[in-house]
Picture 1 (cartoon, rainbow, N blue to C red):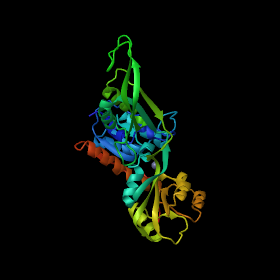
Picture 2: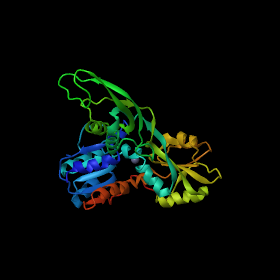
Picture 3: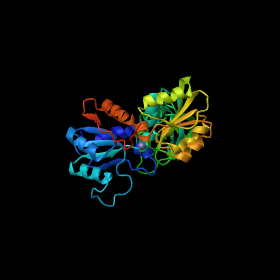
Picture 4: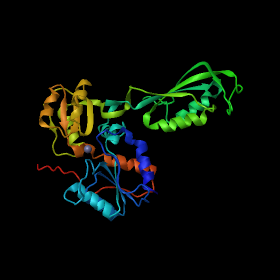
Length: 365
Ligand SMILES: [Zn+2]
């Protein structure tokens, strides 16, 4: 199997267009046309991980963090990034990163944390805008279901947990078929009126090519009239962080204890407790200080994240508890997530989770 097939499976789950603009996701070294000998999954693609891949006979390392993030001006092995890149190129091991695109899908990094905490009624904390489009087309009434089904099969018509959403209204279209045409109805050279339905469906921007080809392939006209409109609507399935609720509320200290256990950390850094119970929980894996205010607005009882700085803890303002359980620790389940996606898609293929602990942070208790 070519590496490109594996990338396709991952990007179907978390399309690269959903990444943040500063990010550097995708294939970083190697060639998508290579035959894949095995996959090693890690949060970080360090030199040690690349050498682990070699030892296990894998020529593809999939990591959450892109090892090449800023520009590389030289590759002499003077730091951990250059060392990893050298090891990957010397050993013909491809490096692929799936980063903020995996953070931004609802079932991604934060979906896994929400599973761990058993959160219900999940909602994205900061949904993205600008990713939705609307397709409007005009279809002869007797062909409307064929076209609609084709659009649904191409992924259009999904709103929240509802699929197959569309709108239709009937009206009359006109056309005059010119020379060299073979009109679906009417005669060349005379104006024809046709009963048509205006069909509207919504779709995410990255499906645009597929949706338009499905429209053209299923529509009976030689020249298909359609509009694609960019929407400003928020997309509730894509964005940063997740907020949800516990089935049963817990005491604050009890909940902090649970965090220690679930995230396997010896210590949780947190703001002052409010002496209230915890039910509503906001989560963001990795560095999450940018969502503190949104979590407050959404009335979270606690915000579980990593990488909080001293001054940022003040923003909790006594209204919410901020719990910092560590960058690596909040994202550690991402390795399982990637493993599960690939194991489901390629059940007989060699996929491994790294045995290297790449967390650069240690605790001396
Ligand atoms: Zn991270």
